[in-house]
Image 1 (cartoon, rainbow, N blue to C red):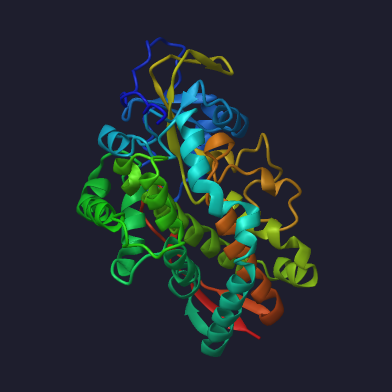
Image 2: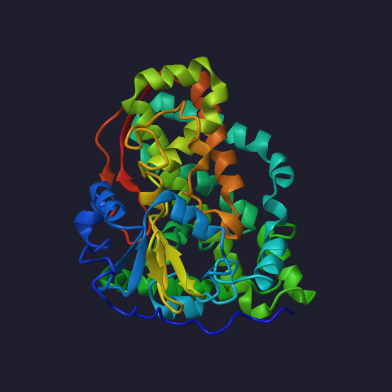
Length: 407
């Protein structure tokens, strides 16, 4: 077995001087979570990296700096954790998310087999059949909740079966995913409130990875088999199953909700997509750019790094604010506008980038494209009401979105 990463370390406070940009902005304040984009702009305009003393972390908010850091895994490491609290960083050690090469390459190779483009292609017809059926049912209803009845129901229709999950536990998937992402922020009141849910998830995961519990031939069962062969540590199985489960739900739900919301708000752009379905991949990319499903994750700084004159010292922690990078005026023209024809929409960092780019993003794209193809063929008009947003440490998502389809 490849050695486990070193112990998780708490980020070190930098040596303060008058030249270090600092802020009292709390990115985890409820008002900032609900209305974040002006705050992100203020941080981008302050400096390439701004020290948030409240959380003892650098906020990196400009597109190029975030992109470069995600591609420099030696300087900005994940093996010391990506959360803003040490208990979760320690708990997740050895998962694909909380690891560095060479161990990361090994575990990602084991997990990534069913998520390659070639492997996912065999699910395309099935996904399209499910998407067509869902859109037909929603057309019959006319009015529905775009989050509950569209964005949530589709991933919940496919992910459990792919994982080989038994009937029990499925009703808790969304709560588990939400609690998992909640804990990736600071251990504030929100995260503490969800801790019992998270502990329940870990307990169930430890039980579900026992041989014979998951459907033979499923993604989850294949991980169990790999552990039986000695390719993975048995003790890591709950974390690795979590790597499949948690990111496959909330992030996809967020992207699908934003997609429906913005297409409904922009009927002219929806007509463009219907007239030119080749825009479908761009629609999903622009939706992820516009409201990044994951607001931010952190990295541990392993050596002194300078970002546009700001020195990040070895031993500090840097928060990569994806949601800010995806609205950075330095990279995007008209970043606050939703544009299905945006030529560089696919350069977003909404699913991360580099070696830790979301391993399940191909699955999310397959789901989103299937739904968009069904919408293009069947729905002429999408009308939406005002969304209500979740107050969540890590996920940018709605709780509800009134929608009406017209054939």
